[in-house]
Image (tube, rainbow, N blue to C red; front, side, top):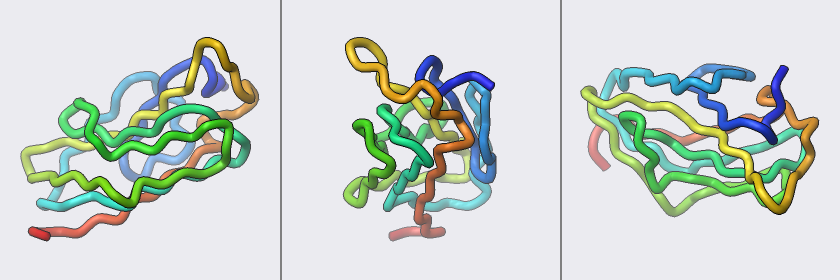
Length: 118
């Protein structure tokens, strides 16, 4: 299995342990708002998890800095039934290389969603 420290990975809702380097675009079945993004890793990880709407990064992101958890309780993103959703896991690369043994299945995320208008 490839290591998170080398590549950007993508996952869709309900995908566990994705190793895909290709974006998953899942149709949104009902209008909803996502908020309260939380990320947990089994091992320390340095990188960013981003919610994508129609393949484009949103403000709903969470950054891990050689830690095992992070959260974004401030931002929210609204989706309509014409939108798609996916999640991007991007490791921090460059000067600092953290824990190359961390695997895609070691990172889990959760979001709270509310159907309909706020």
